[in-house]
Image (tube, rainbow over all chains, first blue to last red; front, side):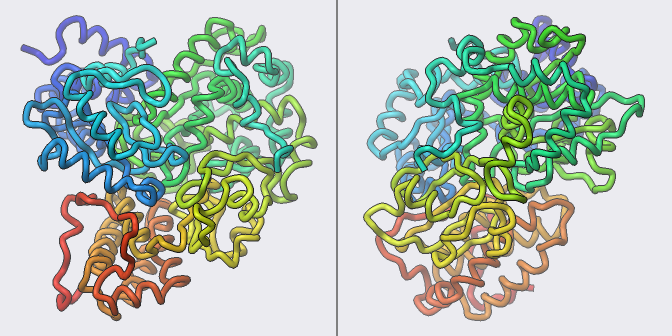
Length: 185
Length: 448
């Protein structure tokens, strides 16, 4: 079973056609295989290597460079907590520790529902402390709100973020990141 | 400051200004319409005359950058908008794209026309899902109304914009690393020369400008260079968005003329340190710019004055630390950031940030030694100006300026065998940011 079926192969070719040089489609195609498998597998990298006519090692070199490309199974909901200085002075680090306590020491729930990440500045320091769920921002988050957010994610019911529509799960978000359009309204 | 001129944030209070209808009602695309009726060189001359300097950190004159694009090379010319905002403390480009996406698109279109580019790119930070959604929607609207695509604004000009998302890497905001990433590679910087203006994307002449810079362009074209130079200072004309965060009452983006004193921005606009407390330290332009002390709060926020004061204007991101915040811990957290984000290409930056984190970690958590202070000075000096790109120079700003201005605070950490501050917010990262850099070194171990 290939990672990209015939439909997704055509999608991949459309993505490649957006660029003057095929290799520029590397990141979008990595997001595309991530949307299928939840993370980027060796098979996914091999298929991209074939599409872009580069070696698998060249694809892997790219995957290992970027934090949003996951090389291990990742939760349906990625909860990112900023602990850089502007968030930390108003409690970002404590939020992260609460999140870890709530979902377990392995950075995620055993059922693969939630992954917790400590992340760098998210460019929203006016709303510190900031967290993201699948890259949707939640502003000025209190510890209580954070625990409520974790409960909502366990129930697949993310609340509305600070701006824009509610997040989709990680696979659907990876499709958006692949440049297939954000149809959340 | 209430009646300060607003340029790039001028439409932020207007409902619906993020849609094409709202934008067109408020002078939207007037700059582009005017631009396509002008010879491209006249636009470059106008931007040169305006004195506009890049708003992404380096402050390089924008018109000069455009003027470096060689003509008739037989290669295409590319314009890349750098929307990979990630400098800690900086959040202006995100808000510019969320609130007024068409302003950026108009700026990219004008820039493209001026330098003879028909294919432009927006390199969007991957984590910016909402800014990207709004830019995508605005791009579709702009194509629909022929402000992009063929016959832009009724002219014979064609301009296409492709939005390209990053995938989580601060270094990709460095312009040559951005090009590498856009070419589908690891985001590592290139050796210069050749500069991107000569050999950039796919080896072709390329202009790379920051979001705020490009968002300013339509206003200059519409209102003229003279209008722009009427604001700000002689060498730093215009207005700038200052992102104020950290220990302040009202963190936020505040647009003000360049040259506005930092104290006005921090106290009057952002409300000062909560609880009437004092500023202990501040950076004027993000974590990559050296700390300044409270005595320098009256320094005008322009490129020259801030440099004369011993720092850099950077992105204009003012991060304030209050009297209760720990300098050592803030320096540690920022070094953790740099160690995590170093692309690994150059040894001084890759290894130096890693070692600095180790030493700072033990200083903060117990086990620091007085001789660690000169070690950190030395490691810092061995990173500064010794790498391909400015990342390494920025990475040592917190430690070198921290040691320069707050050496006593480092010494107190050694004397107290750890952080002397109690009941403080905890600033340092909880998890290893470099795959294990935080393991403490036994105090007796010699660092090579």
